[in-house]
Image (tube, rainbow, N blue to C red):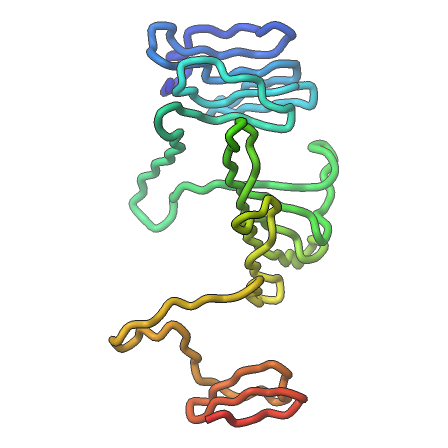
Length: 242
């Protein structure tokens, strides 16, 4: 991939309007660095490289194609970074720092409204999704696992969120939520929880309760351990198990 703008060999307008930045034609198995169709494309950034795509862009590729041929146009709602044939398409971010800060980060941002007039996130809004897709024998792609961040309340001075994990059951085709971390701080598991067997050594038990103070008011379904006895509450009555 070009390291600076001097490595870019041409800046052209594709058919239908837009922008195309290409690397040196002598490079092997390299397609365009940036390819957009439509209008409202802006390249800016005296202190860096900024890339803006407006509402009139139909589709855009940004990245490198290790396959050596131009990919088919993607849907208007999709971007494109990298792909490879006979191997993997890798995304690598390097960072060097003398201290704890300075690590790489991937930030997904979301707002309601428009870029010129943004408005606050509302409860239930999806903040971002990381999806994993696979192809069927016919080549169709389906997202078969994802991790999604969702607003748990209207954003303001408080900005509670939940994080969910979904997969597709064996023999099925639809995504189902398996686990979530709620805005309340609770971890919720779907279906069943299977714990691996422990080992003989100390500190290897598959499930261990830390001791603590019992709830002031017994809570149905609560399992509690005060360091001496184990309790379970049912029918609003706390029962000592051992």
